[in-house]
Image (cartoon, rainbow, N blue to C red):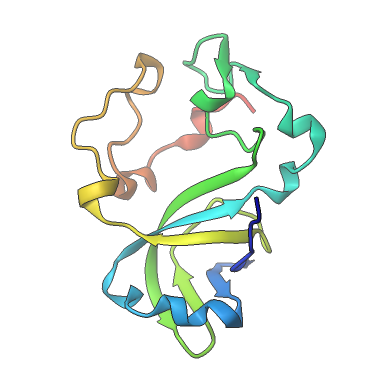
Length: 155
């Protein structure tokens, strides 16, 4: 299997943007009509044998069960440290390959693996079922910004 980095996530103070590598800029054509994108990126700070061997974690969320399987969490520690974040596009500079975004839970210089346009017809589930311990979480991306996430985690 071969993965190719298509760019880097840049976090510079209040400014957050995706810097797409020159050879992939043509792939951005048509993206300006979408308000949001799915960003697949690499949790590079967790790319080590210890983090990749984690399959079960002790209660990461205050209301969660005592143990959870790693695939029931959004932890960066996992067999393949791939992350998925939905973010809002605020501006695209096609000449420089820069996509300005509102927020992403990544560190500066994290590698971008892929971008996909967010489309409600395939990305949105109208009435998802979730465990009781997280059923009070916001129902949409827009509400998540005002939610007290710090009060949800045990770390």
